[in-house]
Image 1 (cartoon, rainbow, N blue to C red):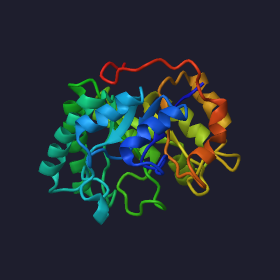
Image 2: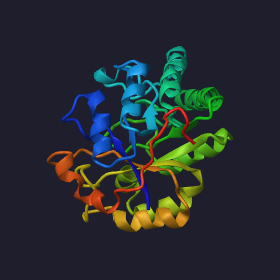
Image 3: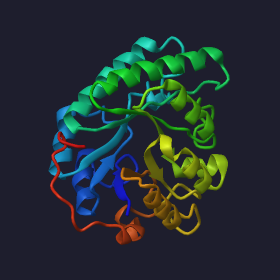
Image 4: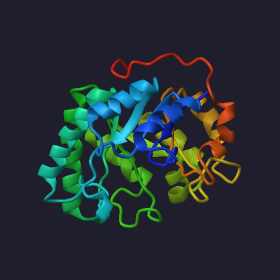
Amino acid sequence: MPRFAANLSMMFTEWDFLDRFKAASDAGFEAVEFLFPYEHTPQQVGLALAGGALEQALFNLPPGDFAKGERGMAAIPGREAEFRKGVETALAYAQETGVKRLHMMAGLIDANDSAAQGAYRDAIAFAADAVGEHGIDLLLEPINGRDMPGYFLNDFDKAAAYVREAGRPNVRLQFDMYHCELIHGDVSPKLKALYPLIGHVQIARANGRHEPDASGPDYPALFSELDGLGYDGFVGCEYRPQAGTLEGLGWFSAYRRTDRRPVDPLDQT
């Protein structure tokens, strides 16, 4: 049975950010993820995580000025120094949370631009080596063009090619089934074909990016596939609750674990 991580950037927004950790724990989640922690100190985030006895599944490297529309710097020529400083910033939060996966956003630039491709390859190499010294995986995620027009990495096969080309065992694919459904259609064939590269999985309903339901993808079947493939990582719930976080957790009741153990966030494996 999959283990689920609540995405605190989209779920539990009825609470202030630092209070979302306990709310997620009280709802039965054993882990959390979020887009960015950088409005709070590493110590504040670490304490909130420990207070909920939660594992930190994932967060993103700094994306540039997100409020002004930037969506990463990794593929943007000329942003190398800022990008590398961002990796250092993320590692300070990794130290406090024990996170073992960091997602690197590519940025808004033409995927066929050769300079952007070179910058992206260099960013992968630098970030993978830097976080690898701390036992952390670097994740690359394709994002669909409807939600994020102009995003550099917008195809799962291209993302897989970058993962393979990197030649580093800690460069992995972030497999968001929602984005896969919108980009490629049926998720199952991509999941099976790319499974050896996958380092993290995320979910949302294709229609509206809400809670998983019967409208697709077929999550009960996909969760069974993950079990059959031997996936033992977290499944990130990166969806926007349609009516309210707690009101929308009916789907989760079948998967809620009753055997949770207290977690030391600095001693994750």
